[in-house]
Length: 181
Picture 1 (tube, one colour):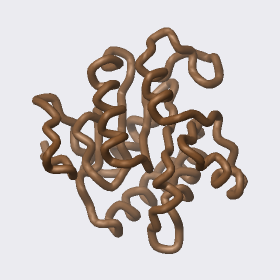
Picture 2: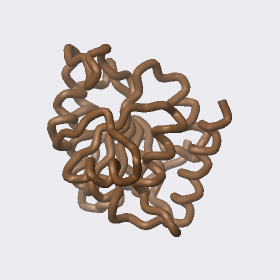
Picture 3: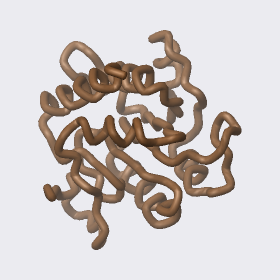
Picture 4: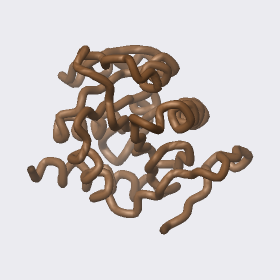
């Protein structure tokens, strides 16, 4: 199994670390297997440029290809709407983290709890804390995937630390494979 180290080197994740995603097909398989996935997108998605696009454009592409509801955090709901995409909900990042660990929460649509949560575009340390809480308190009902550019050891699955070009290619591959139904 491939190994990765946390991007923030002073942080110690403990003995249980995320599985490293070595191929985009792993993300695709996890999404297709999930019964109730959700995608949490943070404000950094508006700031991060991947070639001619921003990370939010990849988030929209992934959400559309996989038909996953998106929860926009921070102030980016307007950025989604400017791009013609309406997220399923808006809420603060810590709030969605708390709700996801609540086994009695019925989701943003009232249809039941989620079994897969993807994360992208948050401050590294914020995502670290949210995923840590989910790892310890939602492990029985929720699998987490960080599709960010830096390894998140508290997720169930995470991309390793990678160059922006490699991250761009991985996201494009995930979207392309999800589109091939």
